[in-house]
Image 1: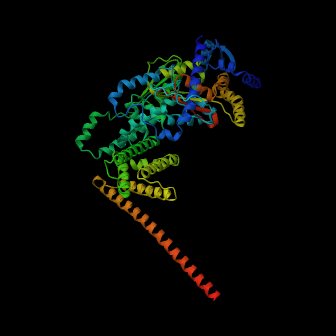
Image 2: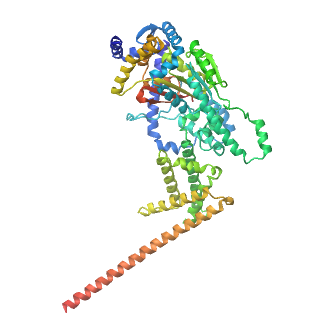
Image 3: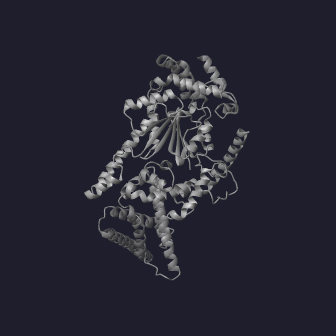
Length: 308
Length: 316
């Protein structure tokens, strides 16, 4: 493991341009897979295998690695989105459906409040008018026409997600689609919100994924990205590195029986562009009012942009 | 080749953005954003706007040529004496789009209150996704501040037109108390369509985050009214006058919140009484001042007389 850390330092001391080329801006076929150098095709295959292997234990590992804090991060993402009923959400790399379920819960509670307010308003109307309003509204619509499409490139992750949905009792408003973030199987101007939580790191060509996000969003639509990012505080950064490289692969071996995948995970976090750079990439794709919010001092960051 | 072209494009955009950002910093300090100038077209005219709006949307959607992205300056910006960037009439800035969304959202306020839902509905009428409500804070503060600043602008125009009429000799110059009463009444009448949800708005305006902006809007409105009333004082009176009128305005607004009389008669009567009180108070103040001066002079005279009498006796 000390070997890994030396390689990490060596990589970080390379000039910025070379690093930038490695960060998914495809100067050539050479790409990074963690700290290894591979071709684009190899990278896609390797990442597919990583997630195929970890799919069943994905949620358990998330909880143990982040000590359950990932749930708070995802909650904050959905709160920031503040969706109102009638929103169409595309959750890319949504695999096991965490964001999708939270979205449905949020929209359901907002819809409840809306219906309560309507009821209070109805207390002033005559019984005839109330009856007529039943005909007009879809009164039994508990989600208010909101829908979420969960898109993932990995069949195994989608399978786990569907099982989870059944188990937790989510039946309406969910769709599961197999698709590649770099080439989405959807038409232009379709979605209100596009989220990608802890997925954009695994995309081989980030610029293509951002362009696709821009394409499928409606005018006025919002792009939200939740991802591990750069910690600027030096003390915290050292502790974080220590934890990442010493503890996480070990957990991976013990819980999931697969330390290589978790080694990849930790390395890919270090290879990912920091907040400002990702913000610039999002602006390049055409988004406006791009901003980011650091959670936990930069361990995780939420980037947000609008298609205006 | 593609990558190189992409790189050049990106570099070009960044240059545009840097210039834009700096020009924006100089032209639009944060407060002016609140008292934003009118949008490129009147927001009320939905029908005439249709072909125009679609073409402007197109401009937004087509990436490279001439995007003018707005960048809120985050931190110190370079002191750059670039040419004063001519704002191209075709492209709408982010600010103007936000202005349009908020104006469209106002008609949904009676139903949804001053919330992000109203803003989402407003965005929907402009053809944008409901997610555009995410451009603003989730408690609706921007919507309320926008509304207040619009009302203030309307009031200024009203007072300016009145002043013009007086200058042209087509109307009589009103006495001060009537002028103040009419100005405050006109301003408060603008709240009538939203009166049910206005208490909610008042409470949001008092949040610590919003106090600087709401206070600035209030003081500038009061300043405006006194300016058109013909106040040219340069001494302490300036402060007392504004404090008095602010108090009158705020108390009348609160009375209006719980007034259920037809046509808000009680509120206007309350306003009349308060303005009358203020006038009496100022008269009394001047009277007290002149009486005070007279008393002081009398005492001085008495003292001089006594001292003279004393010295003359001493001499004898």
